[in-house]
Image (tube, rainbow, N blue to C red):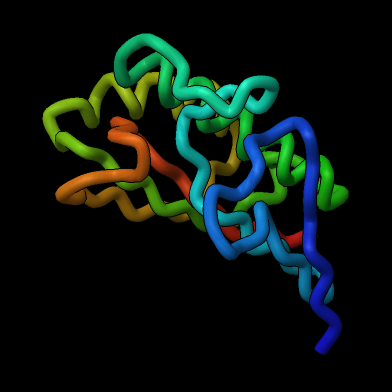
Length: 126
C-alpha cells in the first residue's frame, strides 16, 4: 500500500503527531480541520458561521494539495461543540457542497481543540 503524506501552507500545520491528510491510491483521508488561520496558526474570531467558513477553506486547501477539490469529497464528519448551532453551520456548509453533496455525519462533542466551535474531516476519491 502506497501512503503519501499531504502538506500545504494553505491550511494550518498539524498541532499534533498527525498529517493534514494522507493519500493512499486515489483516496485522500483529510484530518479534521478547525478554524485556525493558516498564516498565523491562531484561532479566527467570530461565531459558528465564520468558523465553518475557515474550516472549509482549510479543508479545500488540503484537498487541492492532494490533487483534488471539495467536489471529490465522498464523506465528511462534522463535529460541533453545540448542536444548537447546526442550522448556521449547515447554511455555510451548503455553499461549499452545492452539487452532489457528500455523505455526512454530524455529532455534538464535549469539546474541540483550542475551544473551536466546529471541526470537519473528509474522505475524498480522486
